[in-house]
Length: 361
Image (cartoon, rainbow, N blue to C red):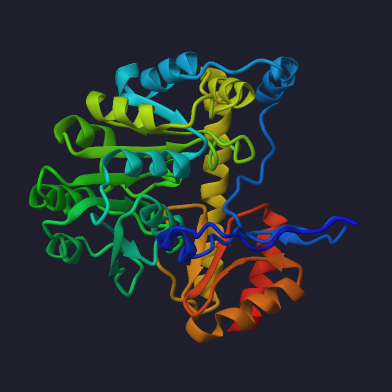
């Protein structure tokens, strides 16, 4: 008879034992017919040209991939206008964030971020041995950068700026971020997390690459998971000053990005694929705008979203409203006690959700 070993005589690190659990978006049960609007995924399948590359690359999975993703790094560098030495790839931007923190954080350092923001931040800060310092977002879901600047202490090592902010949606503006960077000491690393960059249409947002060029304490995170529709392959990257990028590269998992993932991301950066992908992004942005307008017509007051999701600050009603959505065949992402994030999906899924939202009112 098989037995399951449950206990260990080796104690866990206190920081690990106390980690909050990362809660993924609910998955659709086979045959349920439910719509999944819980994970901020691109609802479109990969481009045909990318699928063909994936199929070819699958024949080489018996071989280790290029550990440094040389070809992909070069293509990303060309895409953003930097040198390959400034690019580090990893298994999604969240994994790259972990390597960034491992590179610069010493035990007892502080990592600051807005809250509520990306729920992986407290996990990766704790794993790196840091103390989390959170600054509440404003009533309209925005980063309070003046308050964050005022909260910097001699122990602050990293500040995380998620823009657009997940899960609330607003993006930071160029002027406020420039002021923030001028106030933050140069030895404090400012990580600009742009996982949803391609969905932004706000003309006041900053050029993060230009900020990286101007400030030696800036790192930019981006991903192929959202707009590029490669969430299942896990490819993200950091843009950083050369010396820091070298350190992040050293802390990264060897051979972390699979050969299939490298080839799919590379194919997605091809000019023809880029044009086709951005057409899809434009369609998703148009659909986002349609959904937001319909919700406002229902009477909802929502934070301005520049991402591919909308945020409902429902407070104590969150769990009940999420259950009602599930019963109606719509999977959303609840954050107990705070609110619900709803991804923009297929038009049919969005229409179904709008009926649920009307019932909530």
